[in-house]
Amino acid sequence: MVDASSIPPTRANLNHWTERADLAATFRWAARLNMHEAVANHFSLAVNASGTEFLINPNQMHFSRIKASDLLLLDADNTDALEAANAPDPTAWGLHAAIHRTCPHARCVMHTHSIWSTVLACLADSTLPPIDQNTATFYNRYVVDDAFGGLAFEEEGLRCAAMLSDPAKKVMIMGNHGVLVVGKSVADTWNRLFYFERAAETYIRALQTGEPLRILSPEIAEKTATELDDYPGQAEAHLGELRAILDAENNPYAT
Image 1 (cartoon, rainbow, N blue to C red):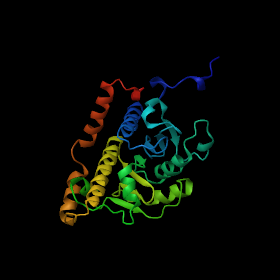
Image 2 (cartoon, helix red, strand yellow):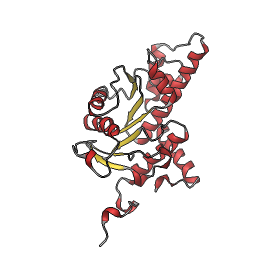
Image 3 (cartoon, helix red, strand yellow):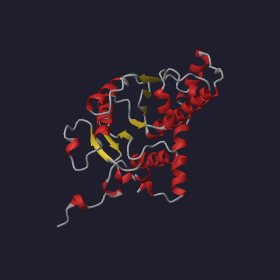
Image 4 (cartoon, one colour):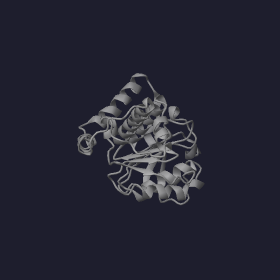
């Protein structure tokens, strides 16, 4: 008799296949853009109505190797999750489970230590002024965490989750740590993470010139952010194009 637990997962016995493939594509692309960090950092996606069941990358697997079938399906209310055979990284559990348990609007959660966002998070003033279209995208739409308390185990994860209670705040600039973005889908969240990293790079490079910054007025910054909040189809097209490129390369992300 074959032990069912020894059978490798396949498309036939895994649920949420489209969501798995979408999320796997973003892991692969984050690695390609050097927005990953060795075998750390995590992306997760809620797959039930309440948001408590979620997909997340397996413990200690490099982003560039993650496939749709590799993703763990966890329950944020399962107090024994870290004791299971396929237990997630403890900090992934501490941060992502806390958010999915307490912030149902955060359907997708992406946390990285990407270079430019982390540089911003290391400044004494980690606010992002609206100096161009990309930086204006996030005007009044982020929170700055200035109380870093070490690795994101349970207590730290709950503290961070509490800062995301306002659905309008979709980016957390994690002081002394990195960045975390949330959204309504994989496409929405990946698009936000990509553009925040670009915005942070623009700002840091502008600071490096030592020249005065041309800062947009609050009215124009808010107008721009509002216009971009739900720009028709952009996030979906962005992810769709990334998947098309990976598919053309016969990349195994969707297996």
